[in-house]
Structure formats: C-alpha cells, structure tokens
Length: 420
Figure 1: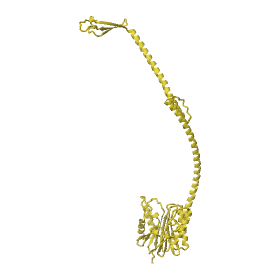
Figure 2: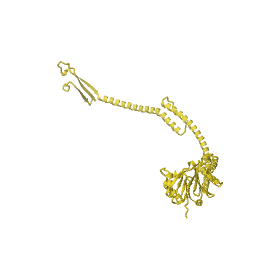
Figure 3: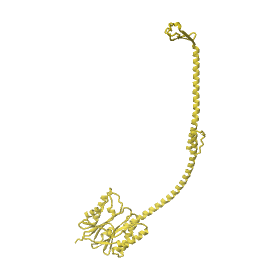
Figure 4: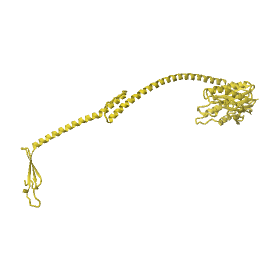
C-alpha cells in the first residue's frame, strides 16, 4: 500500500469478478504539520460495492424513468387534446354558423355561452345574423317595389318610345314637306335668266334639311325685286318663317306696294303676328333691292352689300341704318329707310348670308368677308354664273371638307353689257 500511496494522495479501485465486488481504497492523510510524519500516520479506507446490486438498481431506476417519461408524454397529449378541443370547438361552431349564414340560413343559434372573447364574438354573430335577416327582408321588399315601379316605367317608356317614333316619322314628313316647299318656291334658273337687264346666279345650301336662309327674285311691272335674308336658328320653325316671308313679299309686291319703308313695315307686322302665334322667338335680317334701268334702291338691315364696278373696283354698302330685324318687335316703322345706287354696264353686286363669311376650315379660321370680296373681284370679268362657280370653288377649297354649321346662300347680280 505504501508503494501505491507513496505520494499520500489518490485512490485505488479493485474489481473481483468472482465476487462481483468493487473495492475502492482511499488514502486518508492524518499527518500533523510541522512534525516528522510517516506513512504510518495515514490511514487507508476501503469501500466495497456489490456491482450486481448496483447495476440492478440502475436498471430499475432507468425503467422507472422511462415509464414516468411515457406517462408524462401521454398526459401531455391528453391535456393538449382536451385544451385544443376546448379552444377550437367554439371557433369551429362559429365557422359552421358562418357557412350556414352564407347559404341563407339567417336565424343562427351558436351554442357558445363562454364568458370570454369567443363567447362575446358568438353573441355578436347571432345579433349580426338577425340584423342581416331583417336587412335582407327589407331589401327584398324594396327590390320588389322597385321592380314593380321599373316594370311600370318600362311600360310608360315603351309607350313613349312608340309615340316618339310616330312623332319622328311625322316630323320627318313635315320637314320633308317644308324642304320641298322651300325648293319649289325658289326662283328657277330659267326665271333668273329672263330678268331684263341683269345676269343673276344664285346658290343655296342648307346646313340641315330645312334651312333658315331666304332669297327671291321677283319681276313686276318692268322692275325687279331681289330679296335676301337670314332667319335665326335652323329647323322647321325657321323654315316656316322663311316661307311666310317669301309669301308676304310676293303678296305685297303683287298688291302694288312700292314704298320701301311701308313695304318693310307691313312685312314686319305680318311676320311678327305669325311668329307670336307660333310661340317662337324667330326673326330675320332682310335686305330688299328694287332694280330698274340701272338704278338700285336698297332697303332693310342685313349683311353689307358688295358693290363691284366693271373694272373690279368694289365698295361695301352698310345696311345697319336701313332697317331692323323682321319679326322681332311689332312696331318698327321708324327704323326702315332706303338708299339709292347707280349701276353702269358690267357693274353689279354680291348678296350673301353670314353662313358664307363664317364658314370655317379645319383650324377654325373663317372664310371672311375680305376673301369673298377678293374672290368676286378676281373673277368679275366672267359672267354671273362663272363668278358664282368660282366663289363656290374657292369656298370649298378653303373649308376643305370641314363641317358646315350654317346655311350658305349668296347671289351674284351683274348688269348686262349692251352690245351693238
């Protein structure tokens, strides 16, 4: 032993396989500090263990630990299952109630009476389902009411549509009749060619089926009366006012009225009375020219007259002080006056409505009075028909297919040159 524990430290273990024992020797040092000590002053403690019993005890403890672990796991699973069911069951019930609600089962009874947030949610869900049920019932009732109203409105609309179709057909027929009447009462090319001492060429194009522009050439007792006017707006009413004006002018001329002021005064009162009966606000600008033997008597308010001499020199004659819009007021006699012009051979004039000067090209620029004057002056050496065609060509070239918004009307009047 002394050799084994000569360093006075350590321990020694010895195994006896036959006895299945383990002996552990431990050195206990009992030396006194400051004295001479020997190994005999120390003691050796021997501890003997039965390894078989120890191994059996360890095995038993291991089995016990495993059983306890398995029991703990099983208990955990059971507790988890119970807890998950307790937590998820109300949620699943709410989910099923939501599915039932989606299928239209409005009255829902969710059997959750918990006093927690899930229970509060279940009670709120039942309340919401009841409110939805009431809302849907009200909505269905309102939909039924609106459906009935729409059905009734649809019947009315169908009836009105049929009536509108009938009215449109009637209106179309009326417009067609009015348009034909306008065309029928316009002077023919043969009539224009028979006017004594004058070459006359006329052009009219309506922006709609029925236009509001007026022109006429009438011969009576060796004199010629030329009229040009522009009724406000377009359509049937404007066309009717144009027809009334033409009829009244012809009637007054046939009755022998020659004084320009009286002529326009009677015409104005006649048109005004009819316009009031029509309950419309239509009126027109109107200039009348009386020609005889080279003398021109101009009366009435309209666009400026373009007076052109044989050599192409031209001047503008203002008509603002010669009249007043026809049909606008009942009494306008004090506004009607006239002026006198003298034409020589080859002299003449151009009458037009604002549809000519206000015609626009694609950029919105108007044809204008200056261009009309230049076009007439440039081609004045031609006859009246040639001048008319040249102006039309220039106007068409200028607007280049752009939409025309107003009636286009103009007359070229040129005194004939007497050849010997």
